[in-house]
Image 1 (cartoon, each protein chain N blue to C red):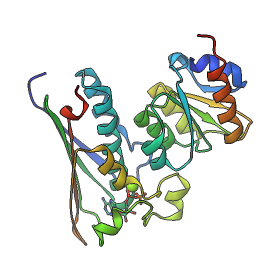
Image 2 (cartoon, each protein chain N blue to C red):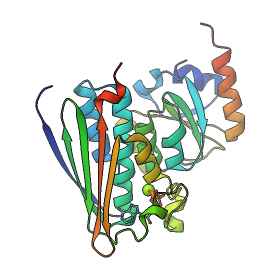
Image 3 (cartoon, rainbow over the protein chains, first blue to last red):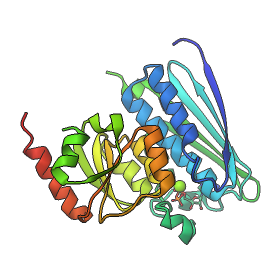
Image 4 (cartoon, rainbow over the protein chains, first blue to last red):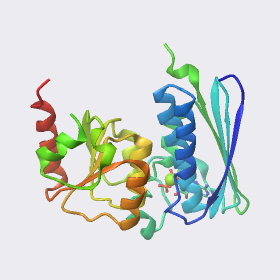
Length: 145
Length: 114
Ligand SMILES: Nc1ncnc2c1ncn2[C@@H]1O[C@H](COP(=O)(O)OP(=O)(O)O)[C@@H](O)[C@H]1O
Ligand SMILES: [Mg+2]
C-alpha cells in the first residue's frame, strides 16, 4: 500500500449494540492491508476505548481515520460535556461512569490510560461545555525489527 | 490447543461456535472489567468472565481472545450471541467458577500432547 486511505464514521451516543463497529471495521481494513499484527491490535484497542468513551460520556461523535504506510492517525471528535480535569481523567481508576454503565463492564477508569499505553502519541483537546477531540497516533516503526 | 478441544476438556456448552472453534488457545485471562481485559489479557487467551453482554464480544474481538468462557452458567444476552456469531467469536458456557475454569484451562494446556 502506498496511498493514503481516509475513513469516516458517525458514532451514536448510548448505542452499546453498535459500539465497536467502527474500530472493528478499521481493524479489518488494517488486516487486509497487511499491517503488523501488534500494530493492528493496539490501534484497534486504542480506537475502541475512544469510541466507547464517546458512546458513554459524550452523546456520540465522529471518528476520522487516516491510514498511510507509516502510521495510523485517528481523530475522535465530540460535542459532549468535555473533561473538567484532564490530569485526573488520565489517572488509572478515575471514572465518572454511572452505575448502569458500570454494570455493563465499563467504568474501570482505564480507557484513557489504555489509549496512552497502546498509542505512540495521544493528544486530547477538551473544553467544558464544548466537547473533546482525541487524536491517537500509532506508528508502524514501533513494530518493526 | 483448539477451542474445540478445550471445550471438550471443560465440558462446556457451545453458545457460538462454527469456524471459531478452530481458533488456537495459548493462554487464559480472568476478569470482568472490560478496559482491564483490553489492557492485560494476552492475545489468543481463553477469556473467563461473567460478562455475557454484547460489549464483551466487542472486547474479545479487540483483545483478540481465542474465545469467551462464561463462568457460573451465565447466560449470554441474545444480542451478544448474535454478535458473536456474526463476528466469528466462540462463546462457551460452563458451570464452574472463574477460578476453577482458569485452573482447568491451565491443566488442559499443560497436558496437551505436542
Ligand atoms: N469523550 C469524552 N467526553 C467527556 N468526558 C470524557 C470523555 N472521555 C473520557 N471522559 C472522562 O474521563 C474519565 C476517564 O475516562 P476513561 O479512562 O476512559 O475511564 P471510563 O470510561 O472507564 O470512565 C471518564 O469517566 C469521563 O469522566
Ligand atoms: Mg472509557
